[in-house]
Length: 346
Image (cartoon, rainbow, N blue to C red; front, side, top):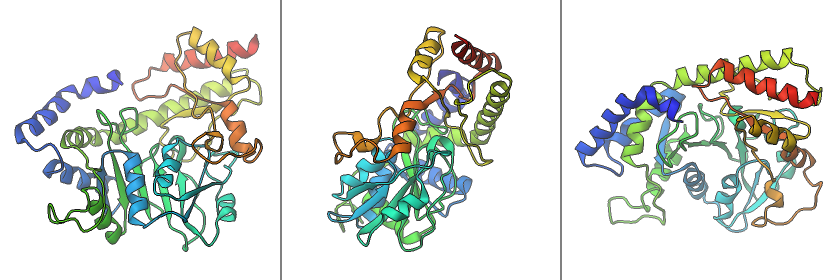
């Protein structure tokens, strides 16, 4: 991350100084300006800054009135916050299996899991790839876009600005994107304890506000987002060229590609994944596993038998995220593929 921030240091210092001089640190004009600029950049009518993507998801669920007894359908192959935010509202979280190519929620499986009690479907735009959404107008669709950026296609999208994301803050931060003015107003109300005006609480809300310091950082980095995204796509294309030329087992699978992919991660599916990861670590190459265990095996969710969601379960044993950050050098990607090829030659 330091390599990405270094070229922006002067701009970031000026942005932080601007906030320090203003004396306004929670909400205020810096946050309002970021919301306008984010909405314009993403092609959305409304952007509401929040304290994190998790709180963005929680606020959307609260705004929809999700409560105990309601059902929410989502994928088991995602970070816990996707389902956790709905479970915190008392909803019964139901999982549906994923698509074997994209690793995103299978739209047909999602619809087959829905019942008359289903209040929302939470689809995840995984690793920077925008998921195919279920064809429904009856059930609200929430997009967990922690790994992606773009206009909301469902009712609302929750964004993450965690420092490692494509548009990263210097701490926790998030936002909701929506084209629904009523929903946007409700979320803006909920994020400040349901108070309007101050000290007059219309509803029970929470403290989901975006800090002005983080908004200033995000405004600075938003100007450069298109360049960062282009660099990630260039890196992904280079990886594909290198992999095509390497001698690798046919079972090794590259990530699905679309022109809208922003490559938050470049995730391969590798035979003998754990041994490969250890080999790469010995060569000084950092990798990560997103995710080592599906949510339906997590103790905090209702227990499921092994084999209930076989595609998600298999993916957890195969996926390996390779370095792809915008500041990555060409020779670094060459080393990654060379080491992967050398592992499978052994």
